[in-house]
Length: 546
Image (cartoon, rainbow, N blue to C red; front, side, top):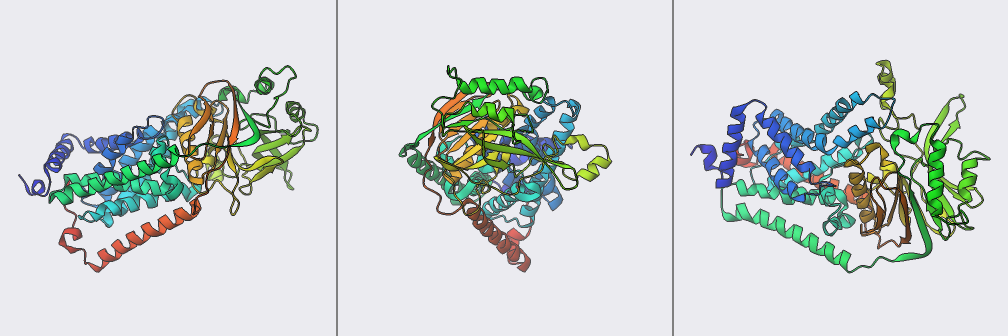
C-alpha cells in the first residue's frame, strides 16, 4: 500500500487504482471519463429525470478536485465534465437546423459543439477557482457548492444568460423536492443539491466514521426533510380556480419547416380557426372567456394594422366580453426609413380592437438576433441568425377587463429565475406562448416545460402554456399539471384558470442576491484564510487523493 492509499478509505483506494489504471491506458482515457461523468449528470434532467445521477457525478467531481495537481489540470477536468453535460444535454438544439432552409443542416454539429464548448468554460472556471481555494477538510464540500452556485448564477445572467441545466432543475418534475424553489429559488436548490450530493465524497476519505459517514447522513437528512416538507405543502393544498375564467389553448401542431411557407400560411391560420371553434355550429369559441394561440401562430406582419383581415376573423370567434391572445410578428418604420421587427403578443376583443400588446423582451441569441453582428457579417456568417428581431423595452403585466392580470412570457423568457415579473408588480398568473416546433420530438420541449414549471413554483403563480407543437399545459402554483397536450398532438385544451397560491415572503430576485452574498462571503473568507497562510499544512498543499 503506497502513501496515497494510506490516506484513503477502502472505497477511495479502489477509485484511486481505477483512475491510475485509466490514466495509464491512453492520454485521452481520463478526459473521456470526465466527459462521461458530465453525460451521466445530463441524464438527471427532464425528460429522463434520473436524479440518482447527481449523487454519483457530484461526489466524483469533488474527488477529481482532491486529485488535481494544478489549476490548469482542474480547469481541464471541469471543462471536460461541462462539455459532456452540455454536449448530450443540449444535443436537441441540432434539430433546429433541420427545421429551416436558410442554414445548411451540415452546420448543426459544429454549431452545437461550439456552443457546448463555450458553456463548458463555466464549469472549467468553477473547478479552477475551487482548486485555488481548496481544503482537505470536510468544509471543501461547502466550498465546492458555493463556487458551483456562483458560476451557475453567472451563466444564467452574463451575456444575455443561459440558465439551462442548473443543478436544482433536476427536481423540476419531482414536485416534493421542487417546492424548495418557492423559498430558496432554483439557485438555492442547486446549492443544497451540490452540497448534499458532494458530501458523498467523504466516503472515500480515510478517518473516523464521523468524518466518513456523518456528512452523508446529514445530506440524506436534508433531502428527507425537503421532500417531507414539499409533500406536506403539495398534498395538503387544493387547486382553486377563478370563477368564470374559462380558457381554450390551441395547439395546431404546425411543423416548423412548413410554418413560414407563403403558400401554407393561410392554411395554418384556418387550422387554428377550426380548432378554436371546437365544432361549434355558430363558428364561435362558445363559452370561452380567453382564447389563447401560441407564439407566431399568425404569420402575417400586419396583424396590428388597421383593417387586418386576420384580426377581424379571429375576433369573430369571440363572445362579447371574451378575449383572444395570439403571437404574431409586427414591424415599425424608423425615422431613417429602415424597419424594426418584433416578436409580439396581442390581446384582442370581440370588436377586433387590440386591447394589449407585448413585444418579446429577451431575445434568443443566434435564433432571433445576431451577437457581434457586424463582425460575423464581415466573415460571411450573417445567415446564422434566425431573424433580425428587435427586443421590447421592458417586462409587462397585462390587465384585461374581467381577467386577472398576467405576466406575458414569449418562448424561452420563461426559463429565467427572478426575471418573469415586472418590478414591484405581482400578476395573478403567468402566460407562456411558445413555439417549440424547432426541436421536434427531442428532449428540448420537455426541458423547456420543466424549466417553466419551476417559475410557477418559485413565484407561486399558475402557468398557462400554449405551444405550437407541444407541450401545452395548465400548471398550478405548486407545479401540478392540471391538464396538458403532449408533443406532436393537434388539439385544444379547455381549462379554468387556477388561483395563485401564497406569494413568496421574499422576491425571487432578492433571494438570488442574498444567496450570492452568502456564497461570496464564504469564498472571500476562504481566500483570506489562504492568503494569511493559516490553513495548516494539510490545507496548504494539494494532497493527491482520488
